[in-house]
Image (cartoon, rainbow, N blue to C red):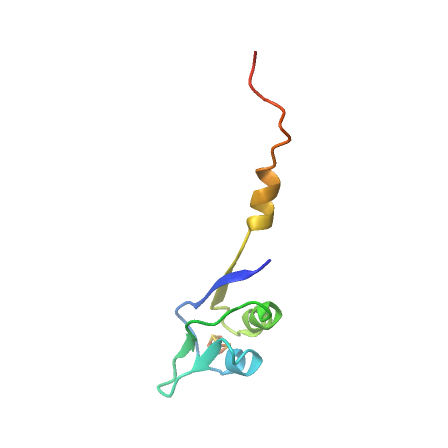
Length: 85
Ligand code: SF4
């Protein structure tokens, strides 16, 4: 599934692992906080983002994944009516 949103919750200890794992998305700022870089296209970076989230020692990296595929499966309409007659 495609990652649609990435964010960092409170509690980051600025260890730098996220930036070293996925510098396209994570940046440790000079004052010691870590941010998610704005405007990044996450396509092709899913594995690196998930790895950064897995490696984060305080588990503050979160992400949303697109569930369009599941939504399409549940919205499938075979044309048969389910209405009682
Ligand atoms: S891996 Fe986690 S704790 Fe370390 S800098 Fe990134 S967000 Fe912060």
